[in-house]
Structure formats: structure tokens, C-alpha cells
Length: 68
Image 1: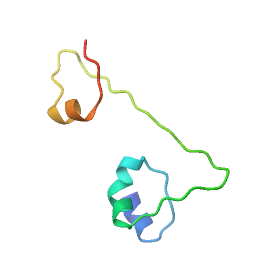
Image 2: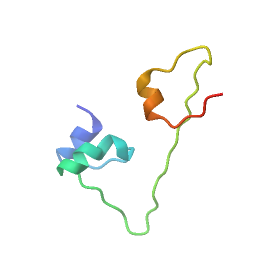
Image 3: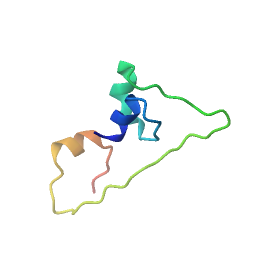
């Protein structure tokens, strides 16, 4: 059982990256809410990999990258 499963069963709330919750939001299992006066949380990540390694098709298709 993961965090989103627990939230969907009424066990509180969570802050997660939106892409992780999209299916449950679309199905109505989760509802997004905003706190008046609250601020959105933005996050990012950097992907670092060896230049001599081939990137698999999933990552190549999912990420906007600039290759040298």
C-alpha cells in the first residue's frame, strides 16, 4: 500500500508530484484542494548519466533533453 492508496481510503492528505496522482484525480478517487493563502510547491530534478551509456527508450521519450 502506498501513500496515495492510503489517502484515497480517507487516511489523511499528501503532497505528491501531480503526475503521480493524475490517474486517481481523473477517476475521482482523489480530489485536489488548495489552502487559501497557500502557495504551490514546485519541484524539479536533474538527470545525470554517463556519456558513454545509452539512454533507454523510456527516458529518451519522456524527458526533454539536450544531448551534446
